[in-house]
Amino acid sequence: MIAKKAVVAGATGSVGRLIVQTCIEDPRIEKVTAVVRRTVSSEKAEELWGSSDSSKLSQLVVDYPSLTVDDAKLKEGFQGCDAFLTGLGVYSGNTNRAKMESAEIKHNSILAKVAHEAGAKRGSYLSGQGVLQPKREGKSRIMFAQIKGQAEETLAGIFIGDDEAHVSVRPGGIFDRPGPPVYGFFDAMLAKWPLKKLKETKYGISANDIAKGMVQGALFDDSETVKGNTVWENNTIKEAARRYETYFKNNGN
Image (cartoon, rainbow, N blue to C red; front, side, top):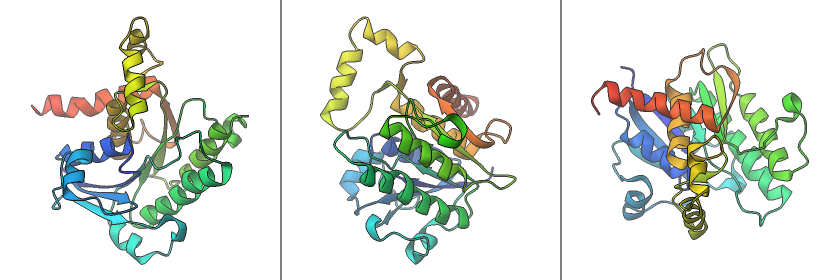
């Protein structure tokens, strides 16, 4: 078995933290680099990622406003990585176009380019429901969908080699998200009939399934399943999560 190395941006977000946790718990993954804005204490790392084990987990602190593709610290920290996974973005309605474009497109693309140069063959991006890639699907009228669509195309355009690919995941109706109280409110609503039925349909997906699906697509799926500019919505993400779980079932974990 070839050990894998993953770089995860947006590592403290509601889905990003679960991506890091999934990678840490996976015996096939040798090293996880969590890209963070400030150093996370051991106590906080246990809370966010379920582990502070420095033999497998490393933190790379970046200053996003000054980020460039020539950043020596980034190049060193990403060296030898197999995949770049990102949950970095803006998920608040209290923002503007410039801030959102910086986070979703500029910062993610810089990190992806450095990861690609460092060896990454695949990328995976946490997008959103209703997003459209402008060149492939047309331009949305909604700013959130416009910018994330541009980010999808930009990131996919980095992983274009013969053995490379990029997966954009577009979840909607996300439940069981760790983080701000508003997520707990949403989960409480989904626990009530008839909304609880949403979890069983294509309109709902757990945050853990998103994390597992992204890790599966970025690190373990074959080139027939993930190729070129791949886009997954709820049902396809869930299918990837079940493929991820199959490894552990087959190996008695």
